[in-house]
Image 1 (cartoon, rainbow, N blue to C red):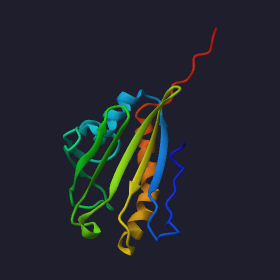
Image 2 (image 1 turned 30 degrees about the vertical axis):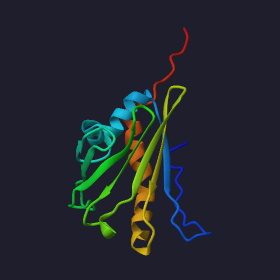
Image 3 (image 1 turned 90 degrees about the horizontal axis):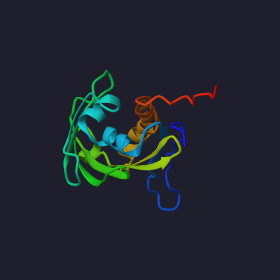
Image 4 (image 1 turned 90 degrees about the vertical axis):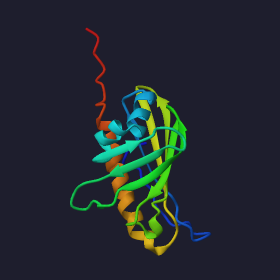
Length: 161
């Protein structure tokens, strides 16, 4: 799965928003990738400008972004799932989101030859107030995951003499 494989659609049957999904292959072991996804220093290397993470189920998560389009609000969340080297999930938000809620983000890791496949699923609340955010995040997640993968450039196979 490449970082460009993203889907975000509205479910036809019930009128519910389908989750945003993106994925990337990373040339690192699952334990190393998991650390980059959950530890403050790791998050600051690829995802946000500042982070605080009590890396455990039920632990607090705080994220800050900088830049011309970044919110000035600090994202405050909680780790809802924490299975080292396998999966993690968090939920939270800030006053800039409709209802203060940014939805649920779940990341799963799968060992593959030469590294780890990371699959991301971001479920936003339903409602027209989230339509613009859904479009923005559908474009942003692949870029973010590409930055994660760039932490470990793909290793070139050595040619036999």
